[in-house]
Image 1 (cartoon, rainbow, N blue to C red):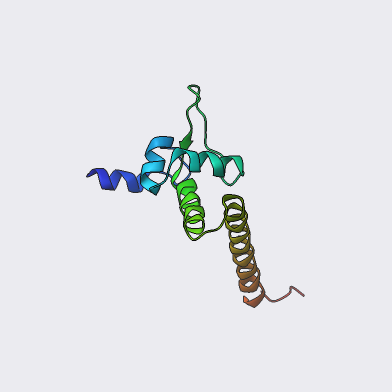
Image 2: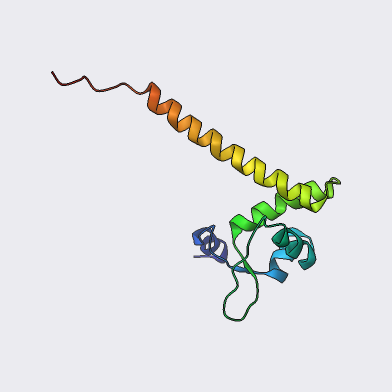
Length: 111
Protein backbone atom coordinates (compact mmCIF):
# COMPACT_ATOMS: atom_id res chain seq x y z
CA UNK A 1 0.00 0.00 0.00
CA UNK A 2 1.33 3.42 -0.89
CA UNK A 3 0.88 6.61 1.11
CA UNK A 4 -1.67 7.79 -1.47
CA UNK A 5 -3.73 4.65 -0.87
CA UNK A 6 -3.83 5.30 2.86
CA UNK A 7 -5.19 8.84 2.30
CA UNK A 8 -8.14 7.33 0.47
CA UNK A 9 -9.02 5.45 3.63
CA UNK A 10 -9.23 8.53 5.80
CA UNK A 11 -12.74 9.55 6.69
CA UNK A 12 -13.72 12.92 5.23
CA UNK A 13 -14.74 14.02 8.73
CA UNK A 14 -11.53 12.92 10.47
CA UNK A 15 -9.60 16.00 11.69
CA UNK A 16 -6.24 15.01 10.23
CA UNK A 17 -4.70 18.35 9.27
CA UNK A 18 -3.08 20.97 11.47
CA UNK A 19 -3.75 24.63 10.80
CA UNK A 20 -0.36 25.09 9.16
CA UNK A 21 -0.76 22.06 6.92
CA UNK A 22 -4.33 23.05 6.01
CA UNK A 23 -3.21 26.58 5.13
CA UNK A 24 -0.40 25.19 2.97
CA UNK A 25 -2.77 22.83 1.17
CA UNK A 26 -5.19 25.68 0.44
CA UNK A 27 -2.49 28.15 -0.47
CA UNK A 28 -3.71 30.58 2.17
CA UNK A 29 -2.74 31.79 5.62
CA UNK A 30 -3.69 30.55 9.08
CA UNK A 31 -5.39 33.94 9.50
CA UNK A 32 -7.81 33.08 6.70
CA UNK A 33 -8.69 29.82 8.45
CA UNK A 34 -9.21 31.68 11.71
CA UNK A 35 -11.43 34.23 9.90
CA UNK A 36 -13.72 31.59 8.41
CA UNK A 37 -13.81 29.88 11.79
CA UNK A 38 -14.90 33.15 13.42
CA UNK A 39 -17.57 33.48 10.71
CA UNK A 40 -18.71 29.97 11.77
CA UNK A 41 -18.24 28.46 8.34
CA UNK A 42 -16.15 25.67 9.81
CA UNK A 43 -15.37 24.68 13.38
CA UNK A 44 -12.08 22.83 13.68
CA UNK A 45 -11.61 20.19 16.34
CA UNK A 46 -9.40 21.24 19.23
CA UNK A 47 -7.77 18.29 20.97
CA UNK A 48 -6.34 18.57 24.50
CA UNK A 49 -3.35 20.55 23.25
CA UNK A 50 -5.69 23.25 21.92
CA UNK A 51 -4.36 23.23 18.36
CA UNK A 52 -6.90 23.39 15.56
CA UNK A 53 -7.36 20.29 13.39
CA UNK A 54 -9.25 20.23 10.10
CA UNK A 55 -10.94 17.45 8.15
CA UNK A 56 -10.98 16.96 4.39
CA UNK A 57 -14.61 18.06 4.32
CA UNK A 58 -13.72 21.29 6.12
CA UNK A 59 -10.84 21.88 3.71
CA UNK A 60 -13.21 21.55 0.73
CA UNK A 61 -15.51 24.13 2.29
CA UNK A 62 -12.57 26.42 3.06
CA UNK A 63 -11.31 26.06 -0.51
CA UNK A 64 -14.68 27.19 -1.88
CA UNK A 65 -14.67 30.21 0.46
CA UNK A 66 -11.13 31.04 -0.62
CA UNK A 67 -12.18 30.88 -4.27
CA UNK A 68 -14.90 33.45 -3.62
CA UNK A 69 -12.55 35.69 -1.63
CA UNK A 70 -9.97 35.48 -4.40
CA UNK A 71 -12.64 36.88 -6.74
CA UNK A 72 -13.24 39.87 -4.48
CA UNK A 73 -16.01 38.68 -2.17
CA UNK A 74 -15.57 39.76 1.48
CA UNK A 75 -14.85 36.85 3.86
CA UNK A 76 -18.15 37.14 5.75
CA UNK A 77 -20.15 37.20 2.50
CA UNK A 78 -18.15 34.28 1.09
CA UNK A 79 -18.93 32.25 4.19
CA UNK A 80 -22.65 33.02 3.89
CA UNK A 81 -22.63 32.07 0.20
CA UNK A 82 -20.93 28.74 0.95
CA UNK A 83 -23.46 28.00 3.71
CA UNK A 84 -26.36 28.79 1.35
CA UNK A 85 -24.85 26.65 -1.42
CA UNK A 86 -24.56 23.76 1.04
CA UNK A 87 -28.17 24.20 2.17
CA UNK A 88 -29.38 24.31 -1.43
CA UNK A 89 -27.48 21.14 -2.29
CA UNK A 90 -29.01 19.35 0.71
CA UNK A 91 -32.52 20.53 -0.20
CA UNK A 92 -32.06 19.34 -3.78
CA UNK A 93 -30.88 15.94 -2.51
CA UNK A 94 -33.93 15.61 -0.26
CA UNK A 95 -36.26 16.67 -3.09
CA UNK A 96 -34.73 14.08 -5.40
CA UNK A 97 -35.28 11.37 -2.76
CA UNK A 98 -38.92 12.39 -2.36
CA UNK A 99 -39.40 12.46 -6.13
CA UNK A 100 -37.94 8.95 -6.48
CA UNK A 101 -40.16 7.68 -3.67
CA UNK A 102 -43.26 9.23 -5.27
CA UNK A 103 -42.44 7.73 -8.67
CA UNK A 104 -41.74 4.22 -7.41
CA UNK A 105 -44.55 1.71 -7.91
CA UNK A 106 -46.76 1.23 -4.89
CA UNK A 107 -47.47 -2.32 -3.69
CA UNK A 108 -51.10 -3.41 -4.24
CA UNK A 109 -53.40 -2.78 -1.28
CA UNK A 110 -54.47 -5.85 0.69
CA UNK A 111 -58.18 -6.64 0.43
